[in-house]
Length: 264
Image 1: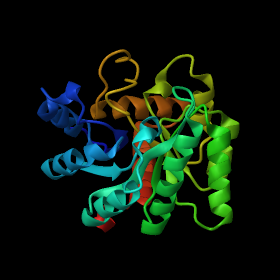
Image 2 (image 1 turned 90 degrees about the vertical axis):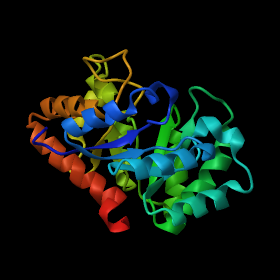
Image 3 (image 1 turned 45 degrees about the vertical axis):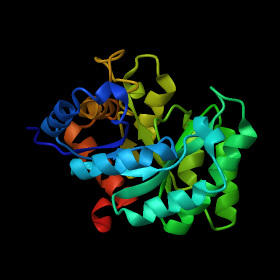
Image 4 (image 1 turned 30 degrees about the vertical axis):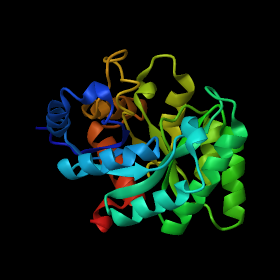
């Protein structure tokens, strides 16, 4: 059992590639000191499964929301379904993952039409948002600035950060947290390395985004929450500090953002 405590702020465990060994995955994350994890939601159909898994394993909290690559599934009833799902279960700690992805899809209007109501709902419910932003930083910043000017921008985190230091500063200035995944361990991820070096102590989280993007030395294999320790170790080296420091800082930041213990 690890002497440190960690929080995996973003993962997906209800996918098929975890069906055969989920119990072992949970045992491994416990052995690495992962005390909490946030299971992100990609589409509304996942919500019953997320509720079930969160009640089976005490470590698991979850979000409810619609991923930008699923934007075509947004309907008039979607916002009310998300609202009801968030209000009826105290293990829901965020709205998302929502956002914009212009790398894999060009349906910009459709994505924005699904994004704005979710941002508004998060503000209404006083829940943070989990933002997926790929090749869309300019547009995402503009939307967040507009919401801020109206006094209606929720708190939140840019998950699986892949942006530049300049983009990071703009999101930080809007009050958002930055979450680093296994990508930060990749040798040629120079701008992400720089971001991890300079992000303020009180504004970063760590994640795995399991089952995707396994960190070095597991790159190319199925990712899992236990590997968040590898992410923390790499960031400790980048910031010239100890693993325990990264663990404590990232845990406090995750607790401050998601307010786990206030919800139960």
